[in-house]
Image 1 (cartoon, helix red, strand yellow):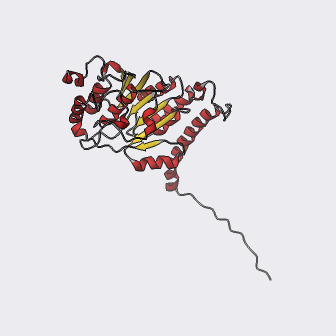
Image 2 (cartoon, rainbow, N blue to C red; image 1 turned 45 degrees about the vertical axis):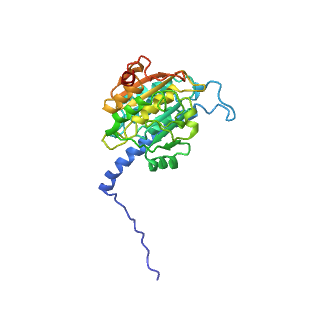
Image 3 (cartoon, rainbow, N blue to C red; image 1 turned 120 degrees about the horizontal axis):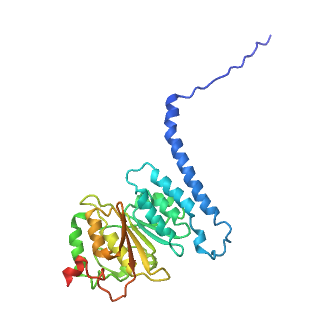
Length: 302
């Protein structure tokens, strides 16, 4: 006789601990899904344009106000201690929306908001500069159209006043406010970027790096000086003005360097710890960063 067979039903009971451990992952997955959905909506808005020709209305390629607000909301509510405030992010987003053409956006520093800036400038060109070559490599591997370059800073926060003095001495020569920094030996000028970056008419420049919260760190002296020169030396078809944003403006280095090279008369507003300047192009023979002669550099050199 053949022995009777029996079927056993195995029931797996999920661990209570495993369930609770997956909750943070689910929240992260939900956030990424919402972010991806918002970005896809922006892409769908442009799908009707032929791939072989640029749209006649360049403003239509931008992220809509609805999608922009959604991205800002999720970036502001993300759990990160070093992020910008919602008010600070909104000021930069508003400047991007106000561009009369796809924006050229230069950002010093890779931060919590990096992908937000790239998404909000959809249809424009966003370039990042950072001191961390490894971090740049990670972004480039994850995002095929990510454009970033490493900068080897030689400055220190503890020596920022000495560096400002060196600009005062050379403001008519190597440290002129209007020049191509590629050929400059100014101590605060960044002169080792790819050549083409010096020719781009930047519409917005954000200084949110490099690190500057301790004496041995490079500080943002070079970033602020370079932003000031790029804005005043603007060429090409960009607008007459360049929006320059400086984050952590309450710190001594950021505030003093902004006064010296971006100038108080160009300060539009401050929001929390973000300062917004609007700089106009200057004539090639100018030697004063601040046209009213109010900067410390002008006073000490007169």
